[in-house]
Amino acid sequence: MTSSERAPTTATTTGADAVHPGGPASGGDRNLASPAWRRVAAQASFETRAILRNGEQLLVTIVLPVMVLLGLVRTSFLDLDTGGYARADFVTPGVLAVAVMSTAFTSQAIATAFDRRNGVLRLLATTPLGRGGLLAGKVLGVLAVEVVQVVVIAGVALALGWRPDVAGIPAAIGAVLLGTAAFTALALLLAGTLRAEGVLAVANLVLVLLLVGGGVLLPAGQLSVPLAHAAVLLPSGALGEAMRGALLDGAVPPFSVVVLLGWTAALGWGASRLFRWH
Amino acid sequence: MPSSLAPAGVPDASTGVPAVEIRGLVKRYDGRAVVDGLSLVARQGAVTAVLGPNGAGKTTTVECCEGLRTPDAGTVRVLGLDPVADARDLRPRVGVMLQDGGLPTGVRAGEMLRHVAAMYARPRDVRELGERLGLDAFARTTVRRLSGGQRQRLALAAAVVGRPAVVFLDEPSAGMDPQSRRAVWDLVRELRADGVGVVLTTHLMDEAQDLADQVHVVDHGHVIASGTVRELLADRPGASGTVRVEASPGLDLPALVRALPQAREAALVTLPDAGGGLGTASAAEAAGPWVVAEVEPGVYTLTGPVDPQALAAVTEWLAGQGVLARSLSTGQRTLEDVFLDLTGRHLR
Image (tube, rainbow over all chains, first blue to last red):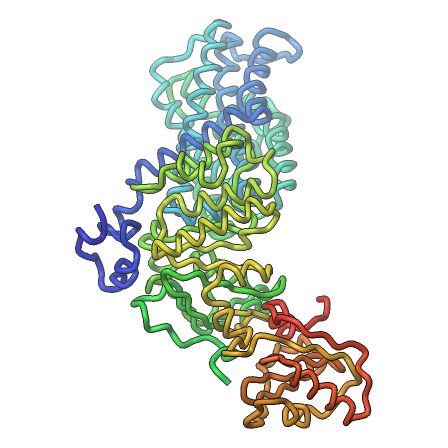
């Protein structure tokens, strides 16, 4: 189909169409781009493959959580107060929360920061994908990586004797989505404001700090007193509590949901205001 | 003087909606105007070069056309549409090659091109395009391992894979070997033949001279000269040469103009202000087919129908002033001469 077979679409573009047969002239403007779902799906797949192919990203997103899981379940370095639960049951929800943080936050912040520095974000924003499609593709890419993480971690955990509360699985999925939203927003806020090297350092450091004192692996209540009060207010603590609530007791504590929603709103607002594309 | 040295702004009426129309564009970073009242028009089916030194505002101008930056003042229209407000309609019709490439480093070259192609309903055949630009040899290599020229060719392929009506190429030949550059230039000419409007920024004179139908010389954020290469070279019939004289500063230019053959009239013309890049004002005289200027203190250029009589007139003029030239040369005037005359010969 060429322009000569099709009537020009709008008054403003007829001139351009007339001098460009066989090219972009045919059909409506929208027809020149592939459908929105295909663009976003292509971007999500592109992002997912980029992360799963990158050795350092795999280390943070897959190897690290599995090592934490093995370390806490199979060894007794840490004298855990499991509150009467089996060790695997007690630890696995927190490890899944760590996995969410590593992908939605650390991995995404670093990838976006370097893409921003290399002009990738700007180039893709000029294609029909646009900025909105780019963001949607990133979020879907994060969720796709999380599916891989959950399969691997749950597989290892089940082998170690994990028996989750099946009734809590839908609630756990909701907690994962909420946590993903909050930590992706934090990742974009960081990636859109700091230099790439700075993001590399900060994103890894924050992950380690939250692992140790953020109430994600172990209940905030088991931390020392001032930290315990702070940790339940952190997105990490809220996500950890939500996962434990869902998979140990079948219900997410409402307070954790409120905290995660609050962080998502605040960080999302900040990222949309402060994110610089250049 | 013909329109050759006048700032742009008059749209070419020959083809409907122009590819790009910029009027009075202003863009400031931290209060400093990087683009300051820039106006130009680029036609469809033509190659338009935006030529200027580093920091002249070329990239910012192009980024305003691509919808990546929002102008502080003035209007930008691409195919008659606003790059920011009408972004959704424009994106499928505009191809972009960024100066820094915009390629993710961990991805294979072929994969990147296929990914960009997936954004369009009817992209060019990726394999054919890869063959055209010699991408096949490194299609399975990650972008990180590509040479500068290979990256540029991949970025160009990504810019044209969606069959755009307008293409923006920011410094397309940077870091390219001569063979790559040839391939890129051939593709650009082919795009033009297909009716595509090509806008490229460059500081390479030969690129502008060989490729561009229209050249806009930009300095300090605005257009200081526009025209075809021929017009910029003042290449009117018979006027094809230059004489360059280095002697003492402040010699009597009107006397020289009167001495030259075919000088029917002597009119004083002031070159467009280069924006303060030069320490001295450029005095220029034009008479008949001749343009005569003291481009910097003690350096005089004459452009016009250089022949033995003209050269004799120059030496007679020097003798009349009692001045011995340190250097006197004749040659073909190039775009580089025009460019340096306009933007100054000083490092910046």
